[in-house]
Length: 86
Image 1 (tube, rainbow, N blue to C red):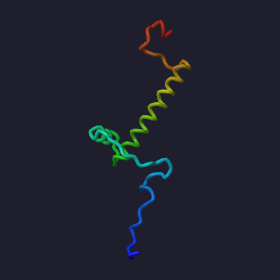
Image 2 (tube, one colour):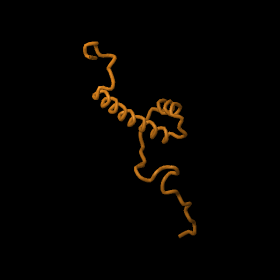
Image 3 (cartoon, one colour):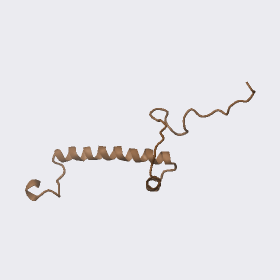
Image 4 (tube, rainbow, N blue to C red):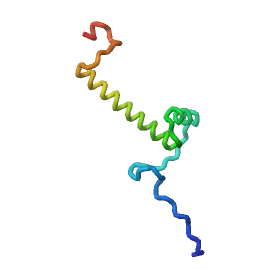
């Protein structure tokens, strides 16, 4: 040993839950990332990707919920012909 002590590094990024987070290396369109960051108001690119993925998951849940309500008769399809609405 040389007597040097390495600087302790955090085991995980600060503010991130330990479970479920993995490191990824990917090619991504910087213009789209910048636009998403501005729209979502996120502080970092990681936060931007995370928020965008949350939005996609939420969209799927909303669509499924609307379909269930519609199937129960709670929503009328205004784009359907009049006969189909009745």
